[in-house]
Amino acid sequence: MQKNGIQKEIFKNCGKENIKIENDGILYGLWNVCRIPVMSSPERLPLFFYGFCISGEADLEIDMKPCKFSKGDIVRIRMGQTLLVKSVSEDFNSVLFFFDRRVISGFVSGLKVPLGNTNPIFKTSEELYGSMLLYLNFVKSRLDLCKTEKTAYLRAACEFLMKAMLCEVLNEVSKSCVAQEKGSRTQEIFLKFSSMVKENFKKTRNVKYYADQL
Image 1 (cartoon, rainbow, N blue to C red):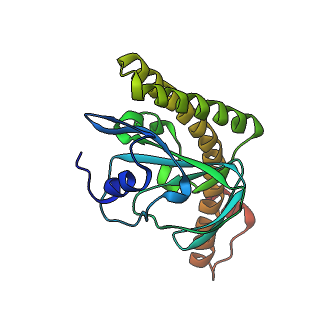
Image 2 (cartoon, helix red, strand yellow):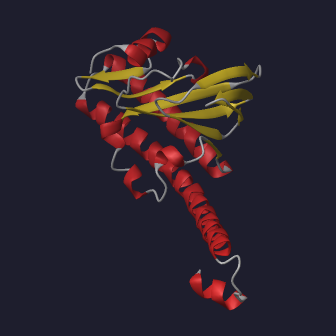
């Protein structure tokens, strides 16, 4: 993978100290959310981004829509979307974690709603918040070790930890997908009913007729 476009910005802004580099490009890494370069570049990198707010809050603008990003929130950041940090509180602290898409492609296949259609920001439970902090601290310590101890075992440990953390996040996303799917079904019924009323406007139809059709 060539270091150009957004990838070049990633290297320039956060340096290599928090990124694990392998022959297949960036595999995983940690980075402050507020140092993300503009994500509106037409170039597409095989990277998967999630941001996690550890403390404080920030006012973001995602695809020109204002969003509040506060403690315990997770934000999904996809390529082609615009992200603007409007303001942050003094105690704001966050982390961005990202993966090679090939590493995690199998994990998102079970979601009922395409990942790109899910809400960009969602709340975590107290339990997940605590788990995320443990994962992040452990991953950070493993990445630090990787700087001096270049072994396949440490690399595998980092990869497994990041995958486990991703599974925790996607578990929360899947819950929101179920709620979103229910909302979509309700909307589908409403639209179908509206269409039927329009088609039968001058005809005498009872309630049972519409119920049977729906």
